Image 1 (cartoon, one colour):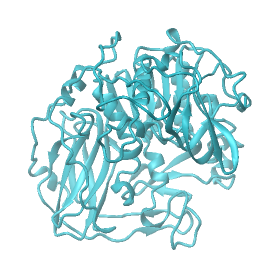
Image 2 (tube, one colour):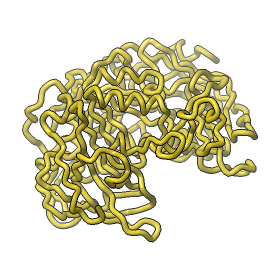
Image 3 (cartoon, rainbow, N blue to C red):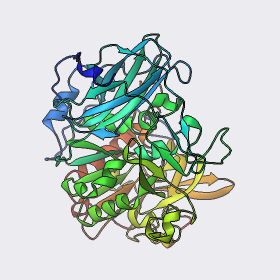
Length: 515
C-alpha cells in the first residue's frame, strides 16, 4: 500500500520544532568512591559564559510537552511486528518508505523526535492512520557472503515534514494486537552550519545485527561463521527493540545536548561517508558510545576536518577500529556494508587502501591512535575510572581529587594511550584507570590532544561513558553527575571553535604507571 501514509496525516500538537532550556547540568560534590551528592538529574547552575553554541529553536523544541510513550511495553515474539526504512536518514520534504511485516491485521506508526523533553526523552510528532498488516516473506540469503536481506513490499510512506527539526527519531510500530517495535531514522539538514554534528553510528549497529541469521560476528544455522557483507535492507533484530544501538549507546548524550539547548544537527555514518566535506561547516563532530565501523571516506573526512580546526569528540571505546566499504543493494546505493577482516577481500588486488581489515593492519596501516589519540586494547572489563589530572579544565565544577574513583565507568571495551602506537605525543591523560582483561593487567585512559590546526580531540576510552548521562530515574540508568559535567565542559569548549586556542593539550603521560 505505497502512499497509504499520505492519505491522512494525524498530527500530535503543532509541527513546529524548537526547544527550551538554559544549561543546568552540574555535577554534585563527589566524595569517596562511588558517592555522589545529588537529589535529581540536574542541579541549577549559572549560565556558562559561552556564546554561539546555543540554539533558541532547540531550546524551544525541548520545552514542548514530552512523553515516555516512545518506550515499548510489549515487544511480542520475534517476527510479530518488525520493519525497516529505505534510507538511514532523510531531509525535510523527502518521503521515507517503511517496509513492515506483522502477524497483526493492522498497525500504526508513531514518530517520536528524541531529545530532553522534561527528561522524558521524546516527543510524539506524527501518527499514521491504520495500515493493513502483512506477514512478509523470510529473508533472501547469499551463501557466498552470508548476507540476509528482506525483499519486502512497501507498507507505508512517512513524509518528513518541513517542520521536523534535524534529530534522531524513533518510528514506533504498534500492531493492532498490541505488539510493538522500533525503527530508527535520522532527520538531517545538509545545509546546516550548527556548531555540533552528532553522528548516529548506523554502520556499527548493522555490523552487530543478527536479523536473518548472520551479523559480521556470528551466524546461526547458516553453515558459516560470520557474514562478510550485511545489509540495511532488513530490520534490526529484537535486541534493544529494533533500535540497533541507539537507545543504550546514543540517546543519553542526545538528551543532554538537547537539554542544554545546544546548536546541534544530526547525521549518520552513511552520511559522513557520502558527504565528508560537510564536516567543515561545523565546530565539532560527536561520535557516540560505540562507533567501530568506518569507511576510508569517513576516516579521510574526519582527519581533514580535524586538520581544518574541527574538534572531534569520541565518547566510546573501540571507535574507528574496523575499515568497511559500501556496496549497492537492490534497495539502493550504499545499502550493504562490507567487512572481510582479512586480505581475502577482493578489493585488495585493485585498491589496497580500501581493504576491509582493521585500520591498524596491513595494507591499510592507519592506527586509530593517529586520529583518536589512543586506541582499542581489550574487552570485557568492568572497572572504576581513576582521576589523574583533577586540575584540568574538563574537571571544572566537579570537585574531584587526584586518585578519586568514579564507580564502574570503564567497560566493557576500553582504549589505552601508548606512545608507541603512532599517534600524537602531546596527549593529556585526564584519567588513567587500572583494569584486568583476559588475565592481563593494563590501563584504560581518558585522553585529549590538540592538532596543529588548533582542533581538540577528546576520547573517553570506555563504552560505558554515554550510559552515565541518562537521567537517574531512567530504569536503565547508572547516572553519574561527574560524567555529565565533564561531558558538558567538553561540549561547551568544542562548540566555540578550535579548542586548542583556550585549552592546548598539556602532555602529562610520562611517569604514569604502565607508560
